[in-house]
Image (tube, rainbow, N blue to C red):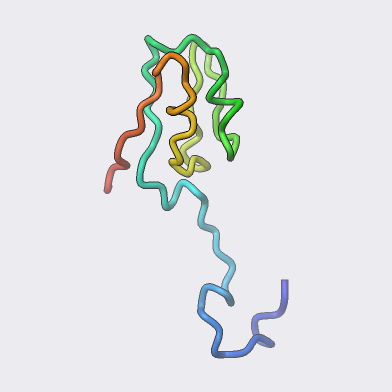
Length: 90
C-alpha cells in the first residue's frame, strides 16, 4: 500500500484511507432460514458468491458479517427455505 503522505491531496478521502467495511455493513436484505423447511441439501452453500454459508447441526445459516444480501441463496434453494427480509435499521 502506498504511503498516504505521498498521495495527491485532491483524491477522494476513501482513496487515501484503509476501509474496514465488510459486505455485511452495507447489506439492505438478509437471508432468513426457515429451519423446518431446510433439508441441508447445501445448494445455498454451493451457489453463495461470497461463501458466507455455514453448516449448523440441522440447517445452513449465513455469516452476517460477510453476507452481502444478494439473495442468490434464497433464489436457488429448492425447498424455498430461505427468504430475504429487510435488514433492521438498528
